[in-house]
Length: 136
Image 1 (cartoon, rainbow, N blue to C red):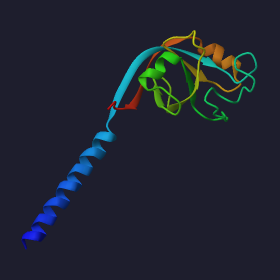
Image 2 (spheres, helix red, strand yellow; image 1 turned 180 degrees about the horizontal axis):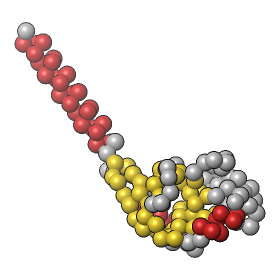
Image 3 (spheres, rainbow, N blue to C red; image 1 turned 90 degrees about the vertical axis):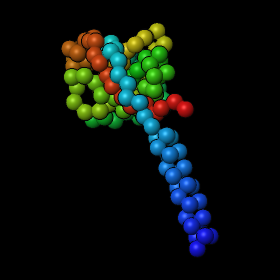
């Protein structure tokens, strides 16, 4: 009987420790900030050699909600694959591209080939929000 109780206690302690480690590893931090927001298109002159391939080698496809970020935002967790909510726009956007290093505190909303729509968008100051893994 004593051995069974000891085994149960050890099992409980191991399970508790594993759960605590798992919760800590999956802890996330909600982040938000105000950025300049512009728009870009998959057309020559606005992109590199292949206008449908983004900076991290992601192939862009019509219908996707994609943004590019200035490189200074990467240190805040806005890296390839990050999910971002943008004030005033429905849905969630995915970071799939990065901007030239000359840009700071800026996102670029991908508008496929619709140059007119991108020009109408112009430049805005908008709040964005995302979740990033908690630093250990």
